[in-house]
Length: 248
Ligand SMILES: Nc1nc2c(ncn2[C@@H]2O[C@H](COP(=O)(O)OP(=O)(O)O)[C@@H](O)[C@H]2O)c(=O)[nH]1
Ligand SMILES: [Mg+2]
Image (tube, rainbow, N blue to C red; front, side, top):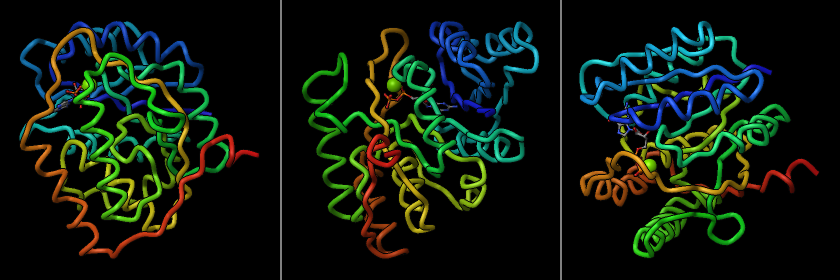
């Protein structure tokens, strides 16, 4: 099994050099860093990591409009052209622990099209978030499920594993949403295509270094995006199994 881990970066100079070796410690992994010309020099750090780990670390230096959604679209467009079996998406800020990778990759290998690394499968597994951020995230997920009918408990999760063949079937060039809505739109499109979506429990750890790029514009977009999806594709009636339940 080969996995390509796509890591979007914007000002992650403290985090990336720590994260990459932890990912590479998982057998069969390669990393694709998608950097948006970070002013703090993350792009050059990524190039140094690529030189240190030839063939296992790749770097895309984006130009043009900056954003998490467009970075994932570019990274995935390249990822689906590789021979990786599984494409993983992971934040660079060390919120997403690579120790969860083997279970997520195994679930994709066992036939799930999309494996969502879920914070809300067994209670709330989030470390170092203030109460207001937990409440906001839980409300957002309740709202998205209510509007769209999706059964995934963590629709906004950014830690995911895709079977490459499945990811290649998504209309990546037509996705316009950013931030959390990008994750919601991808989950929604996967469901409309009848993909097998499962959730695998993770423990999310808030970043210690660097700053979050979460903005109020992105939050407002996330309130409208579910309606846009429902108007275009209709409400879904989906259920996402937990990995353990699905494997048994
Ligand atoms: N390429 C790229 N990466 C971004 C951008 N904005 C955020 N990221 C990365 O996306 C991941 C999640 O961003 P973060 O700010 O931690 O969002 P939060 O976890 O929702 O607070 C991190 O790896 C960021 O470096 C962007 O505009 N372009
Ligand atoms: Mg973060």
